[in-house]
Each structure stands twice: as structure tokens, then as C-alpha cells.
Length: 305
Image (tube, rainbow, N blue to C red):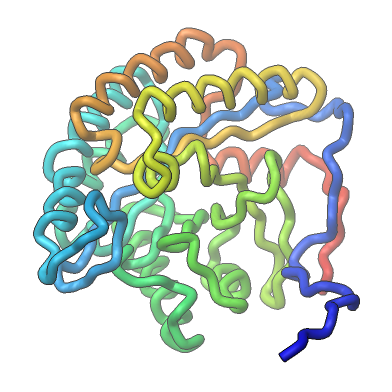
């Protein structure tokens, strides 16, 4: 059967207008820095009877002992060594956590939140489930439950990253409804973007999908050497661009991947290399980026609702 050529205007998210990168800007981050850098650690827990999750081996059995236990290494071993490293290097972590971590290994979450200047960020209940596949009422219930549990466990939680970056068409409305002020789901820019929702504004903070150990190392098969080189190249280029306009660089990590000893050893070298130059940039968390942006930066875009 023949198909008709699509010549009409294509569907877009209708959350933000198009914005081209401006060649120069007088805006900057605190203390005159042009580049804001944050390092995110994702603390995730998976159901043993689910086949969902990053896989070391694609030929999973049921129950999936191989992949489940590999991921659990991050919560039992890798996450603890990484927390010690972050504290030693004085890195303020963006702690992106499933609420199921509170049920399974709350002491690991407590360890990460004990690191000075850490920020707790919502990440659904479990990465065994894709948020965008839930009915509207169930997604609403899940987001509300996560906000309530995380706030009661720690303090005000403003940021959200959906498990698997899985959104429904209603997710931004639900996040704004339940008092989340920013989302990490979108990787469409190197600067924050103001999103419009029917429940008020929602800020999008850049979150990396390639400077991210899951997609880069697991499905795409990059070595830890390649991944760390990518971090260093990203840093050098964004630092250069930040001389003319502000930039945001995120580094997304998972303890069951970079917490493996052979990767951990290499990651330490790259983090130490970046931190030796910390006077050249603002080392921070997504929440502080969102707060500073909301207070200090003029917005070029207007809400679309």
C-alpha cells in the first residue's frame, strides 16, 4: 500500500519554543564562572521477578540471577566505595534515588546524603517499571508517593528524573502538580529551559545521555577508557564555550557500572583531573543550578499555555 507524503507541520512537545544558541552572553554562574558541572549518582533497585533493567548479558534467564546480582553489586559494594571517593574529593553529589532504596538499603542512601552539599532527587519507585507506560491515575499516584516519601525521609525534594527517562504526555503536569520544580528528563540543550505546563512552570535542567555510563558502556559497548575520555573532551569543549555563554555539564553515573573495581580505578583518575581545575568552573548540583537560573537569568522563552 502506498503512503502519502507528510507535508504538514510536525508534532512537537509544545513545552518550549525553539531557541538557537546565542553567540555571546554576559550572564554567568556564581563567582563569574561560565561552566556549571554536576555529578549525578543513580541509586536504583530492581524487582527480582522483573526482566527490566540494564543487562550485562542480553540472554537473560528467568529468574534473572546474572543481571540482578550484577546490578545489586552497586548497592552492596560499588556504591559505598563511590561515596567514600566523592567525600574524599569533596564532590557534592546529585543523589538520584528510587524510593525502593529506602525499603531495601536505606543505609546506602543515608551514606550518600551525609556527604556535604548533597542533593536528593526523585527517580520513581523502581527502575523495574517504566513510568510512561502507567495509566494517568497510577502515574499521578506514583509521583505523589515519591514526593511524600522522599520529603519525609530527607527534606524538600525539587528535582525529578523518570526511570529510563520514560515520560507520558502528562508527566510535566504531574511533576508541577506535586511540587517538583525541575526535571532532568530532557537532553535537548546545554542550558536550562523553562517548560510550560497546565499546572505552572517546570524547569528543565540538562542531563546527559552520552556522558552517562549506562547507554555509553552497556548497550553501546564503550570501554571505561573511552567513557572517561568522553568526559574529559566534553569538559574541555564546554569550558571553552563557557567563555562566551554559560553552559551546564552533567556526568551521570550508576554504582553497579562505575563501581566495578576496574572501572572505578579509571574513573578516579578522570575525576581527580577535573577537580584539579575546579577553580575554572562551578561544581554544584542540579537544584542549585535551577535556583540560580530562576533568580539570575532572564528567560528568552515565554510559557506556551
